Image (cartoon, rainbow, N blue to C red; front, side):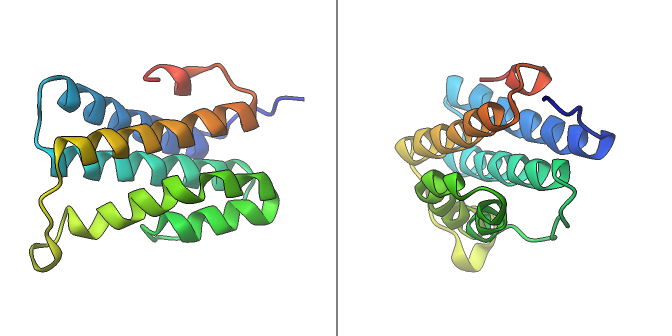
Length: 138
């Protein structure tokens, strides 16, 4: 049985969609790879937080996708298939934002980051059995 989303959960997915669309659009025009990587990381983070919210779990104010994934795995161990994606995207958060840790990502890194965020989204869509608004940027 499909459960409808709360406004809070819908907001997480909507913000994730915005980040995913931004990454996709920037990839299409040859945008700055670090910005694309950052938005891909943000999309993955927001989708995982949306899943936690949907299941009425506390949404921690963290940016570590591996920790968020662990929280999802407590509810469903099948989330373990996303370990690689969470690792890729977690590594891109700090390195794409802070001057002390700044790494120049390449276009290939940006493509990998976008693909990782998209895999997280598609996995969640299957888990939530949804074909609604959160599939609009796939």
